[in-house]
Amino acid sequence: MSNPLRGEVIRLYKNLLYLGREYPKGTAYFRERLKGAFMKNKDVTDPEKIKQLVDRGEFVIKELEALYFLRKYRAMKKRYYEPEH
Amino acid sequence: MSARVLVGVKRVIDYAVKIRVKPDRTGVVTDGVKHSMNPFCEIAVEEAVKLKEKKLVKEVVAVSCGPQQVQETIRTALAMGADRGIHVEVSGKDYETLGPLQVSKILAALAKKEQADLIILGKQAIDDDCNQTGQMTAALLDWPQGTFASEVNIEADKLKVVREIDGGLETIKINLPAVVTADLRLNTPRYATLPNIMKAKKKKIANVKPADLGVDVSSRLEVLKVDEPPQRQAGVKVETVHDLVGKLKEAGRI
Image 1: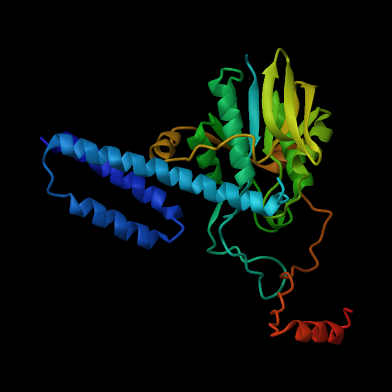
Image 2 (image 1 turned 120 degrees about the vertical axis):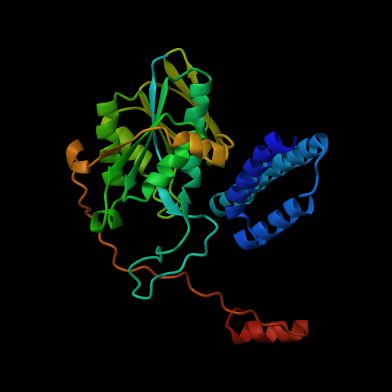
C-alpha cells in the first residue's frame, strides 16, 4: 500500500539532502531539520496524505533552488556592478 | 541546424567561501576549500543548453582544463544538459600558472578539432577576474566576438548579440562561427539536481593533454606576491559637532 510511495519518499529525501549541501546555515543544520520533518510524518499511511507531503517536499526543492539562485545573483551583482545598475 | 557549441567551464573556489591568503603570500588557500563552477560559466552552459532545446544547435560539449577534480565541474555541466565533456589534463605547476592565454590556445585548438561553430564562455572567472579568455580565443581563431552578452539569438546564419556596456545596451550582428561571453543577466541557470547528476553519469568525458593539441602551457607571467586588502581602520565616535571639527583639524583635513 505505502510500498510504491516508499521509493518516492526516499528519493525525495535524497534529493533534498543533496540540495542541503549548499544551505547557507550549514549542511548539519539542514540535515537535522530535514530528518526531523520526515520523522514527524513517519507513521502516515494514507496514500493521499503521503502524496500531499511528497508534493510539499517538491515545493521545498523549488524554493531552495530559487533561494540559491537569488543568493548567488545578488552576490555577483553586488561584486561586479555599480549600485545604480 | 548541425551546429556544435563548445562551452568552457572553470572550477573555482565557491563564491560564498571566505578567501584566506596563504601565510607565505604566494597565493590563496585552496586545500579543503569548497570549489564549484564559476557562476558566469554556469550562465554560459545554461545558454548553450537553451539553444539546444530550441533546436538551434545540435550538440553541446563542455570543456575544462585542470587536474582530476575538474571532472566534477564537467559533470555538473553534463547534468545541466551538455551532451559530452572534454577534460584537458593540466596539473601541478602547470595548473598553478594556467591563465587565459594558455586556456584560449587550448580552446582554439579544440574548436578546430571538434569543428565547433560557437564557443560560449563566462565573461570572467571570480578567482582571477581576468575577463580575457573569450577575447583571446576569438583573436586566435580570427572569429567575431559578442562579449558581455545579455541576450543571444541565432537569425539565419548570423548571431544577434545584445551586449551590456557602460552606457547601456548595444546590439550587434556577427557572423558564425563566433565566440560569446556570458554576462550576469543572460539567463537563469538551472540547478544540477541529484537525479540529473545521476543521469549524466552515462555521458562521456574524453581525456586530452595540451601536448596532444600542440599547445604549450608555459606561462610568461610570474606571481610575485599575494596580499590581503588593507584592514579597515575602526571609526571614531564624537559627542558634539565641536569635537568633530576639532578631530578633523587634528587630522589635517580642514
